[in-house]
Length: 300
Picture (tube, rainbow, N blue to C red):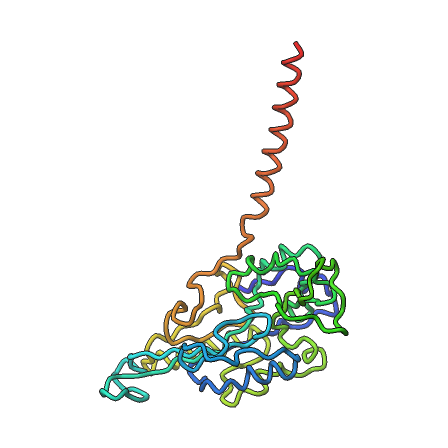
């Protein structure tokens, strides 16, 4: 079953495009960070990650307002394949493999960030992706805890003189304060080009295209790796029936999602929001009615 994201494609009518996304095959990622560099260069993202984190060769640590792509490095004393064949070995001759993965915003089918944004700064594009409009974002930060992946973040850097004003300026704040994240290079998509990170990836670990085609490609790749007995090969975010309706940017992993710092069973955080508001409204009505009855009874 294929689930369509809310507000797409119906609201775009004839202007709706096929849903586009990423398939990241971590089995061929070499950790070169070309995707991080290309993303920063094209989107004019401020520098960060200049201090080593101590987490292997990772110098960005996580996704954020100034890191829209993050290449994770995980070193394991595990065989690459289940038949004992290993890519390399440590000094003691034990199996050693490096798991590398370029993380990014998932562009969820059911995106909680869209549900909680009070200004409409977050919107679903004609390509089915999720984008933040910086000239509309008021920096409230509601979307930050709403994301089950910790992707969204506010930019804590000084504002530039030529920056667009916040929709509702933060009094006394000289910080940028707005939320920034991957747009799946929306400007490039509108021009008929692939995102900068996919264009720069030398091994085609990051693959861009129509989501349906990417899912078929991922299924074939997983079947090949399982036939070759690769250790732990699995798809993450490919299933449209998962807690967020499937990712617009999904992955082939070589271990459990937690190993890569990803939630094992993500669920859209606003799943019960409508029911919660309904219960709140009923409670408010009951309170008003109860108060009125008590007042009437007291007068008697």
